[in-house]
Image 1 (cartoon, rainbow, N blue to C red):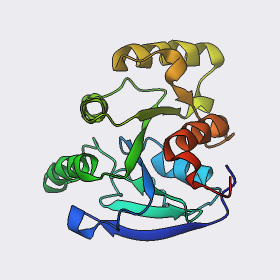
Image 2: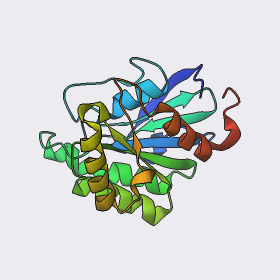
Image 3: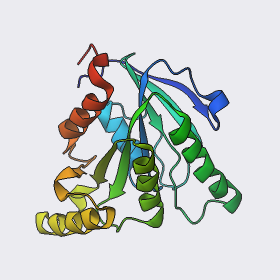
Image 4: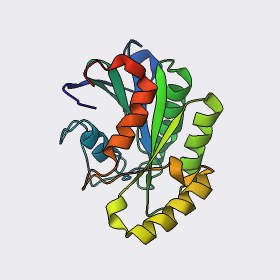
Amino acid sequence: MIVKHTEFIKSATKPAHYPEETLSEIAFAGRSNVGKSSLINVLVNRKNLVRTSNTPGRTQLINFFRINNSFTFVDLPGYGFAKVPLAVKKEWGPMIESYLSRRENLRGVVLILDIRRIPSDEDLQMLQWLRARGIPPIVVVTKCDKLSKNQRAKQVAVIAREIRMAASELLLFSALSREGLDPIWERIGELVGSEDEEN
């Protein structure tokens, strides 16, 4: 995928504030500090389209980005970080679930997992939401450069077992080396169809 144009559209917390449903959407979800912002920035070949932070829990809104004037990336709030105020944390679940259940042009969700971590209850809940609604998940396992090949294989097997998917369905990614970029774009392209004329 050749990304020639990226544009921030708007941020929202509720359906009334979402952009018009004119383009297919691919959403990105994962725990805080899992590398979600870095993944999106590498995919679109921009350093700062999505702001990255060393402070987990910074993304507290649903952010919409137009890609190649053909489809939209949606950055969902990161979940599961203990230091986020409880009042804010309680809003995230309903905010995310409302988006997943009401957005008719949502084509799939990139669920991001850290290769060094066992999937959390929130990760499993997210997958359960997606499966219940028939929304295709693209499971991306980030920070693969942090482990050796043997360690990778062991962790991928553990993650696959926890989320009840085949290890071959997991896409390994490193923001540092850009490993895994093409397979992720291939899966996204399958879901948004032929809408991207600049591919």
